[in-house]
Length: 145
Image 1: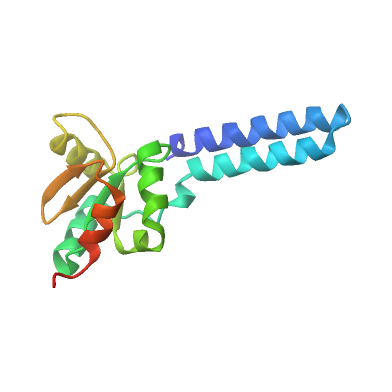
Image 2: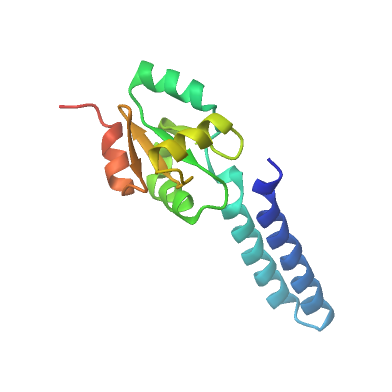
């Protein structure tokens, strides 16, 4: 769990150091802008951007009950962040499994991707799809007509 926070903390600390240096050198406005930029980047890299993760077993159980896709992801993954941001509010309808927190989720990702923990892997009706288009994932949430 701690490795999920290493990059966000490093970004926040670096931003603070740069902002402090710029403040002491007489550029407080630039310091504020850069600190804000570093904090936004840290926030995007953190697990806070994603809905609360569940275990792989719980996600499978919920998916079987409601038919919604399961997303295997990990913090810091640029493709996972892209998927999350492009899904917008509909992301909360998916079942998110953090493979760094759940060994069963990591195993499911490896099983779906020839031994690699490639994410995001979206599982729809038991079939894995690696790094799918967010529009396609959103379409999977719509009930069939």
